[in-house]
Each structure stands twice: as structure tokens, then as C-alpha cells.
Image (cartoon, rainbow, N blue to C red; front, side, top):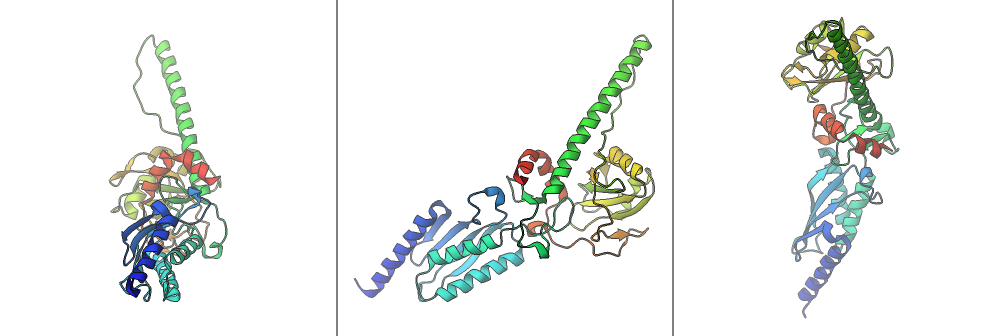
Length: 339
């Protein structure tokens, strides 16, 4: 056996070791020179609800391997925007250059897992409140955010729990009002000697949450073409509108009324109606007293404050409406994941 055959035998044994270590997570595309895809997740003791990122890493070596380091690429990922993907790849490629020349496949992949574990936190904004999921000063701390089990949509735990509690309270309030209205109609029929009352829809009640002085309403499910004035108009029938905000690309908006009672009536009256081209969902928004709120003048122009950051959710810009639909479909799993 000549030197070249010996080198190929050693490389083949290294590829077999890769298959033994990573089993079904490793897909071998070519043994010599090595070329494979590897599914990598952060080390969280196999607790999937604590895994906020994952990647499929491609490692492709040339015929000169191991004298030359292999190239690496990300062929699929979840939870990482373009900036973080580039940072991870640069780290892995730098490690490959450090290990060259020499056999390195297992060591290189283990380095990738360690780095991915260090980056295991959600990126972007909470789709419900539009505030950053992880602020710069808290990157290394355990924060109250969570991931829905069936996808990688992340929310502040407080936001998703408040949304679910509001939804349940609205259902109970609406059911109670419907029962009372039915009882009144039945009594009217008896007193009228069998007369029939007109059918009518009972408005769904709303739960006043948090700050009793908060008059800001979250409007989810807006179409992309709606203007500030289009959003403002339906609310004017309930009272003075202080400000309107439609964050770009979020599929939602915020409307602040002057009076709390008017805001409650607006939530009750407009929830589930069509504004613009789509049916919207209303709930309490965050108070504009927070420094991240950005007001509008009477023409709907933004002014003052820092505004909401331009981060996309996970780098993909998921609309709030989609995430709210998921939150309503899987609330039990979401709240369990928060514990």
C-alpha cells in the first residue's frame, strides 16, 4: 500500500468516525474527499424548548485534504439572521484554518456545536409588543422569553401569557353577556305573550389589563397597504385619537386614545372587524410612557423617541398576525414552555 492509499484509508476511517459520533444527524455526500451535511443544535440536555437556534452545516473538503482545510457553509438554519450566520461561519472557518494541516472533522464539528450553544438566544423583536427579545445589556442572562414548540417563533413570556389570559377573559365576558341577553329576550317573549325579538350579535367583552391609565390598543392582522389615516378613522367614533403607529413590515399597528373607557369600547367594538382589507384582532398595547414608543402628529407622521428597532424576527420579518394565530392555536404548549 503506497502513501496515497494510506492517506485515503485514514480519511475514510475519519469519515466513519463522523458517522459513528453524529449518527442520523450526519449525511455523507462523499467519503473521499469528505463532503457531508451535519444537523447541529445547541447543547441543552435535549430540552427542545430551550433550543432557539439550529443549523445544517455543510463541510466540503478538496482532494488536498488534510493538507488544506475544508470549506464550510450553512445550507439551512433557524433562529439566526444573516449577521449571526456570518459570524458563526467565520468562527468555524477560522478554527479549520487553525487545525490545518491535520485530520479535523470531528474536532471542527464539535467547535461548531460549542459556538452555536454560545449563540443560543432568540434574535429580533417580540412580535406581540415589538420590543427586543434580548437587549444588548442582557445577552448573557436568562431572560423571560420562550419558543413555541412547533416552530421557532419566539415571544416574551409575559406577552404571550397576557395575550392568552386576555383571550380567555374575553371569551368568558362575551359568553356571560350573551347569556344575559338571551335571558332578557326570553323574558320579553313571555311578557309579550309569545312575541319574537330580533336576533342580534353580542359584542365580545374585553378585559382591562395592566395599567388602568393605559389607553394604547394593539391592532393585529393589518394589510401591508393600510395607511395611518385608514387605521385612525374607525377609532374616531369612540373618542379622540392621540396617536397612530404602523411599524413597517410588522402587519400590525398601535392606536392611542385619549380616554381609557373609550379605548375599552373600541376594543370591544372593533375586535374581529375589517379595517383596510383584512379582519383585525385588538388587545391592549404597551403604554406609550415607555421610551421606545414613537408618537405621530395629526397627519400621522412619526416624531420623537427612539421608535421600535428595525430588527426582523429571527431575520425573517414574520408578521404579528401569523404569530398571534399560532399563539391562539397552541397556547397550552406555549405557557408550559414558559415555566
